[in-house]
Image (cartoon, rainbow, N blue to C red; front, side):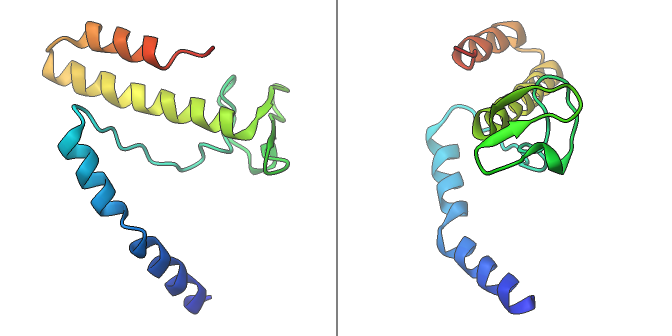
Length: 112
């Protein structure tokens, strides 16, 4: 498995993620880095984390509460919530315009 891991690492490094992140940080006002761990396994409705929730590539069905959604949409909502949580933490630490920024972020990322 070491050779496979090395090959995966090489492909990731070749894609230039660090350069992309640097460009985003240069151009954007705020870049919020969110760890992707368990975002595709966590239920957006109840918060239960279970590998079996992700039945197929496209289907997400929570074993705890029965919530069903497209897997990518469920993961995107989890990522949005993590980003919002980090933004709130930064705003609370700085104390500058926290409520206005939270309101703008919530409006921009609200569910249709």
